[in-house]
Image (cartoon, rainbow, N blue to C red; front, side, top):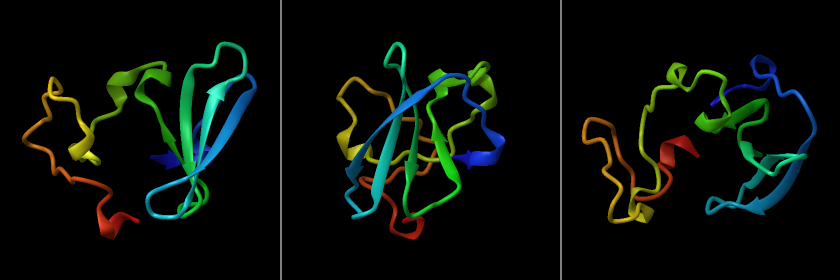
Length: 94
């Protein structure tokens, strides 16, 4: 998650909106040309964007801080045991 003013996208984004488990509106942004997922916005956190690591020029600058929706991880996903993990969205973060 970064301030929207600190993140730049070159090209047109297409957004799709959906209600989150919290009831907030989540807007997911995709590349308008190829459809790759790039970022999300949450109505509970105006001015912030959740950038997908695969969208970064240098994904090494992003370090995971926590695991959310651990209950939805596939059986083959090895979650980092050193990170705080939450079955769904942590209440204090909503």
